Image 1 (tube, rainbow, N blue to C red):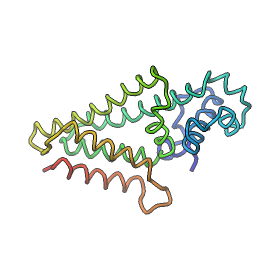
Image 2: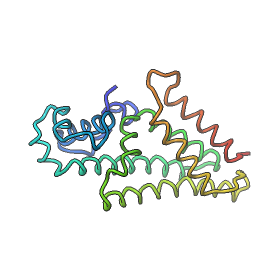
Image 3: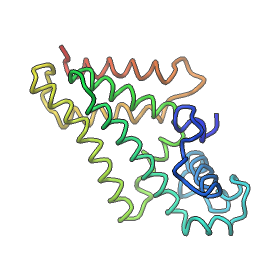
Image 4: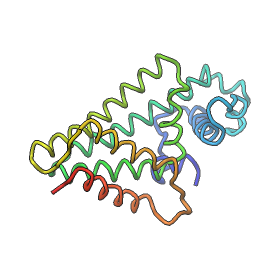
Length: 207
């Protein structure tokens, strides 16, 4: 499965917001290279070669390799935030919303594991300004999950001793799926999403 296909769980329109086509091809090539070799071991020549373009062509669309990583990280984190925000603000009980948030977030990390690995694990490769922007998006993701857990506590539906720590545990559990998920393994993204949703509801003592 190509990065373009896997990023949105099989939808080739995953990077539709990136235009023109050459810029999108370079970004997808960068995702593949960063995931395979790591950011620091990847050269702009590697990226251009994967995209079937010359190194000079890359600089028409991206000034630096870090600009590519920054754009990948921003788009990925905006997508992650949208997934969690949609689940958090839907109608339903806190348990239903938390289950939806976890299963959706896990499916994204499993179905788009190559992109997710870059988005979640190359943060320290960004410069201070870019890193600060991504960290702000991460805090918003954290806030969406924490709000659901707090709603559950307020309604008497959850039994949590440490809301902040539990929120961190929930997000860490979901994110780590990108590290180990194997498309040839025993589970589908949907199955892992359902399993993790059940585990998280047990974690918060859902009634």
